[in-house]
Length: 139
Image (cartoon, rainbow, N blue to C red):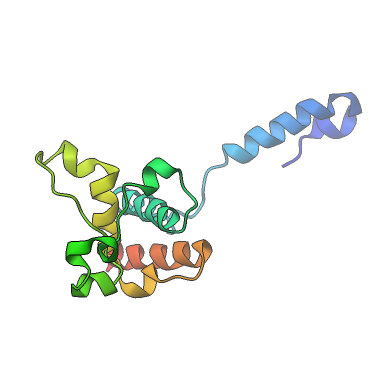
């Protein structure tokens, strides 16, 4: 994006850069077909945050709320322990308690197929997760 006045007056280069930056930010998307619907966007963000917690790239207070079933002594021998499931804490309130990250994160993670959960990197995880959520949303 260039402005005709930018080429004629070299003294206003900073102003032109501001216009270009603002124009880049506010450019309307021409193709919305790659966007997830709102519930899937929330699941996407939750699952990415859980992935980061499991791989040590998130704050400690979030990592402490994500507990693999295999780390729980009483559940260590369950089939879910070997599948990579996370502990979903019981909540007393049906609305606010279920929205907490410690509950919503593991619940979203446990719904993912193993092929998505066992991704080798964050970039691969994001790609597979988005593909999975698109298939749920539009099929």
